[in-house]
Length: 491
Image 1 (cartoon, helix red, strand yellow):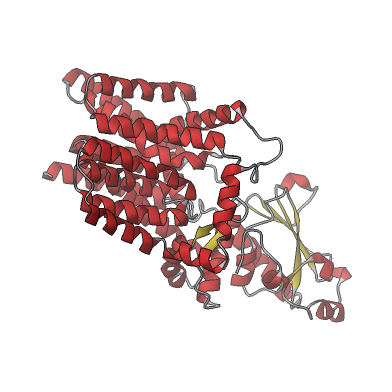
Image 2 (cartoon, rainbow, N blue to C red; image 1 turned 60 degrees about the vertical axis):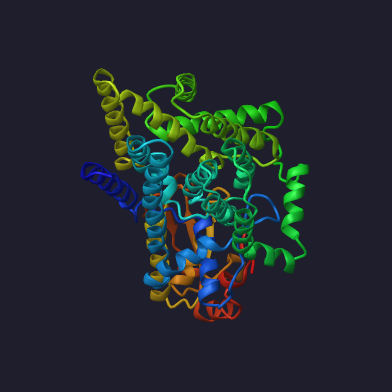
């Protein structure tokens, strides 16, 4: 790697870092998933409960592994249990994924294509905001990059490194997204095109690594009568996870293709200039050109086709109601195709102007989106300010405990409970007859609010209704914030 390449790579990594920390507090979403994560980390650190599982997934009875929660612990400790510092974990992982894009694509194709791939990963607003989400599925794209590399190693007859990396990554699937397991059969393509006999010793080493990294899942399953395995089997063979009135059959395939279309254009620009389907078909045309002109080896052609079709067919079949983030594992393949196509433009002087024009348009549109991003002002900054105001007002009025009611749509009443604990508040349900503070979102649901915090509104209690003895009596029970069940949380 020459000096110029190092400078360009460093600039790309700095861009990746900047876009992921820009306005990190104001853009930090603190909703149900982040609230759950905070409770899980509190359970580990405060209760001393060394957990094997995290939150329950959208498939009933299936949980996500605990790795991502354990990785957040140093940041919670640095922030004295304040969850906002956890944003730096995905920032670090996002910058590492940017470097990984360069490293892996450089090895598979060439240095220039690797730089283009890392630039796309660094600046894509879709990836930037996916990386900013402090959720266990955040590392899916990072995992996908290295999984592609493990297949490449096996194809290049580097079976020792390939099998070990393959086993390590498959063992991590439970911790990020179980659906990643659908890519495991791609190893057969790598073995087929490598034309080398399987080295049994290397395969066994890979399987040992897989066993070791899968131990948390295996231990949990053994302790709980293989409950997750049964739930996964039912999910794949029945309509266990089907939500009434969502797409089925051909309509499900249509729904999947719509999401793939949307993901493909959002990957390159969240500011839409053209119809999403045009971007998808353009990438398909680029891929066909690369194949026809023999710019791409047969091994990589097979991997790309099977990788993308596996995602489409699998999610068209299962009963889960799919969302865009389910298809994040496809992004590295789209980036690889586009990077190779753009690299072709650099090979002639006339076409290089098109390359720089497209790169410039890509950068401007994505930076514009990030800088002008509308956070709806209902995230961490607004919620913590609202919670602290409730605590301040309750202490001023001598309330040892309070209760909270919510005027909002289902789901938007979540994402507060850890903040109550962080502020050492005793919070009950309104039925306890403790003084009621009401949180409103959006403001338009009521005629009047007492104080606003971005998009969130607060209505103070009717102070005349409460006296010292009545409030004291309502506070004698347990702190409902600590004892009431929480959706998706289990100990």
